[in-house]
Length: 168
Image (tube, rainbow, N blue to C red; front, side):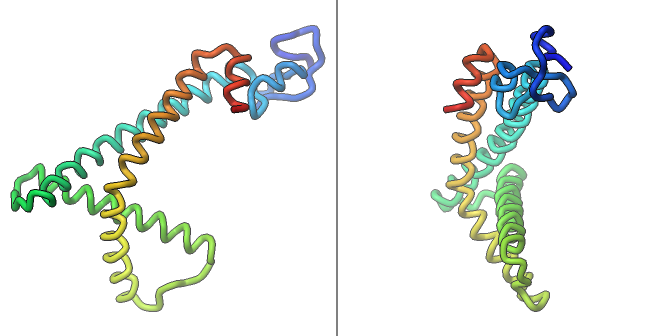
């Protein structure tokens, strides 16, 4: 099989799509992929990062509302504030669930013996993770914005520039 781009050169590797890659094309992207597959992969990562960023912006608005209510001591109950408080609780529950799954996956131990201890652990863990969201949501936004900037630069870069960026 010959390289898909350099048809007179024998391929030394293949892309996941089955196209042959010569030595020069193999080293262009890591892992070795053809140009069209790399472009599609970067585009998919950009789209996924933009979706995650949008979700985190929504949670950030909820955290700002809850933070303002907490700092001012206001007892405002309307649909917006109630939804914001619920979203912060959901963030905490999902965050604790993610941490618990990770801990159980690493240790392979059953931590809690009874349904009551599971319930208490979920309540306390969710509260802790909800509070942690005041730091984690902005951190995720900054991290995802940096990744998005790097991916967009990679999408607009020449293959040689992209290879240098992947090595950095």
